[in-house]
Amino acid sequence: MIRRPPRSTLFPYTTLFRSLGQWEEAKHFFEQALTLNSRDPQALNGLAAVMQRQGWPAEAERLYRRALQFSPDFIEVRNNLAALLIQCGRLDEAVEHLRSTVCIRPDYVEAWCNLGGVYTRMGAYADAVTAFGEALRANPHSAAAYGGLGFAHLEAAQYGDAADAYGRALELGADSAELRLQSAQALRLDGRLRQARSVCLEVLRRSPEHFGGWCLHGAISASLEAWEEAIDAYRRAIRLRPGAAGARLGLAKALMAAGHADKAVDAYRELVAIDEGCAQAQNDLGVLQQAQGDMHGAEVRYRRAIDLDPQLVEAYCNLGGLFAERHDREKALSWYDQALEIREGYPEAIAGKAAVLELRGEIDAAYHLLAPLVEGGSRDRKSTRLNSSHIPLTRMPSSA
Image (cartoon, rainbow, N blue to C red; front, top):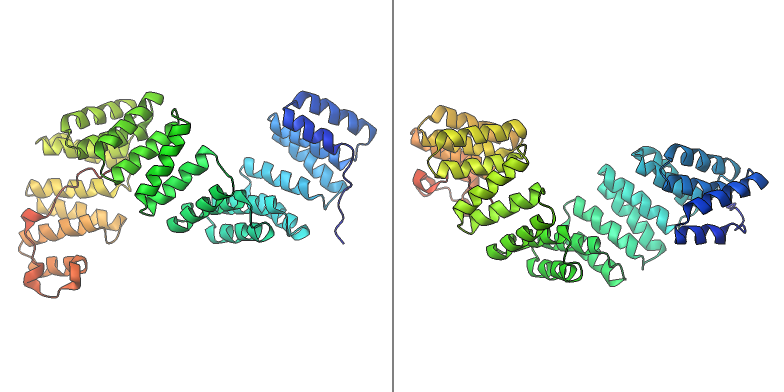
């Protein structure tokens, strides 16, 4: 039989103090209660919550554990202790307490949601989905569970499932700007761009100063190739946070895609001045410099991008294209090979390498390299022979 602590006379006071945010008064109240009964799990739990709220995690943990000594099946304490451990980054310990909690009470929705959230942070997305599923089995109308499920699917790149879960959370009354924007992001990544735009604009209608909302609106507009709208959105975001590198990068890319090359160069230079360590900005600025004929400056930018982010495959491909343009085919092939080591099957690296091989007269090698990318899987070598003038040897900045 499950043993639960009595719902003591402290309970309504705990709720009242928390709702009013009167933490000092609450601290004094629980300390007085403990002078009367130092083993009261309700008072220990209440004081621990106050300590946690006021930034004393070690003392909060001590009090939670003391409460469990006197009442091991006090599930609220176990859940609270797990939340504290999550806050401190001790995820494995949190999982142990949350699993104990749901074993004691399998219908405890909040504990299942916390467990799902921990699994999401750990990258154990299948376990997270299972945990949120248990929460929904206990309460099919839990907006919090659907919201957590949506985020787990989003992190797992299961965008359609994420969008559906977020949609259900919103139907059930969850209405925070952050949840709506996560829903819009899932819709965008699932290809439902018009619907994503509608959700995002609703957030901005309610909260016109929402920085994240303007950034996402810029990204959605870029996906729709509505470049002027994207430019306006990123500029609004930058006005709210002038030092935001991500918004400035989005603006620069949108300006470039819209054909405003000079303004794009200025935007990239402003970005690099603010955040010299932005690898993508260094790479994209190199593309612009190369297009203007500044080969040396472009090479410096590409190499700097790789120094900052050795996994930025675009920069390797751009160096391959740059050396191919200089007719240094050995170096071009070397850079394309490095790109393929980082990301096997990367289309731009394969196409660039194949173009260089053809220029060297190695038609068969180029054919075999490119054949998997040919639409329709044609086996006719003449139909797959490359015309190097049609293969972009440098990758222009992609849309935001």
